[in-house]
Image (cartoon, rainbow, N blue to C red):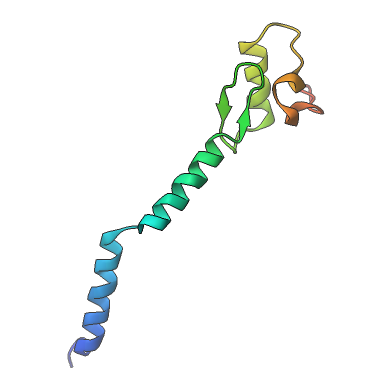
Length: 88
């Protein structure tokens, strides 16, 4: 027996070609907008440095301690560090 009808072969070829074409313009714009939004999820209020959405509080706290003067309140840089205790 053969490997399928011509209709199945044509449909499989269409699907392969569609995958090769990649994303549509709308999909590219949506992905770009999401990436831009995620990359600016956390922004230091003092120096305006941005952090990705997956930045954890210890990373943000490290920024405060290493980039700003000693004694800077972490909540002054990031709202999410208001209740953060680095000793936990």
